[in-house]
Length: 465
Image 1 (cartoon, rainbow, N blue to C red):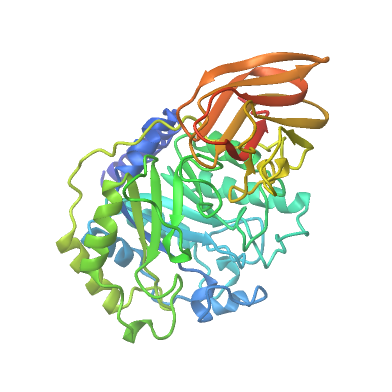
Image 2: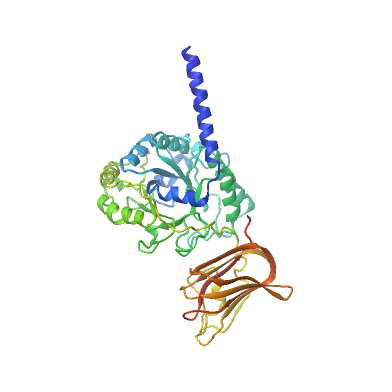
């Protein structure tokens, strides 16, 4: 009888877990997902991977799997430490830039299953955090120096590997609250969203788990008031990226390590960690008030445990910080831009420019350069002339400084200019989505403005909807 009861309990739990997972696949609006994510407020980043064993954040890409051997690994210790700090979730580095996978993957032998440890770390992590009432997120690096997924060497097999690995991570471990992607379209990785097609990866993630927030750590490149290639604006504070606590109106994430670097170093047990009071009062609370979720990295040691000084600091943070339950108040972003920019490096024309700030600066994929209209021009205009006619359904015009008032957007089809929009948009990010059209040119006629207009980026997309 006891064996029968156990069997029915097992069946009930299995069905319950399946029901929870199925519910997680019922799509929710992006605005609702953004709200839920930002309102989580505070979580734990966990950089734990083969770099842990080399005193480097970027170890030798040929480092042998034999190095990875956390003999006392206890993900439950991590989860309880997160709870003690009043965190609401954890995020684990499933694969960092050196390409070592810490889950039971079928895509490569460069994984934990070929190490002396031979156990799925991701599986243990998600179970421990869920058992402690915490939500689960995963980190994944596109840049992969071991598998030579790096600039000028990317092949179709690399892209297939990325898709298969993400499919494993989003299929085998239940509902994943968010996926943090790194090593993509960053100055130090130099892998573009075309080299590894962002739109394909984004749509794969959403097809597997529609309610999984996808965040790419690309905050260094894109402006604070535009949502490009991510569901949430991201800021890696250790890399000098800073959210404006006074002006931010976007749903955001910021990250910082508790210790001196992301992965564990041999001096960590004897080195003072960041001051808990300063972290709470000068970083965490102000970020929360500015619509920003803060994720604090804590690095496990080579045994797979947090050092004592980290545990003490997390307990102190928990004494000082409580989530007061207030809802974040940010503007609606609409869907992020995820497609290829058709205007990039196409022939550009304009009315008279101001000195060196010529038309090519507005479609060079660089928000730090701009086309600037000459002060003498009373009716400035800017134009993209495609090398071959294109189908498109989205135009994004990003001003260096908000001063364009009334303007008209047109496209040239069979030598006839047709209007797409005429009016005003009181934001630097002037985003227009419409039914697909086909044309040879796209033009912006600037009708009224305060000071000479300046366009940082003029972008054209054909989004899949």
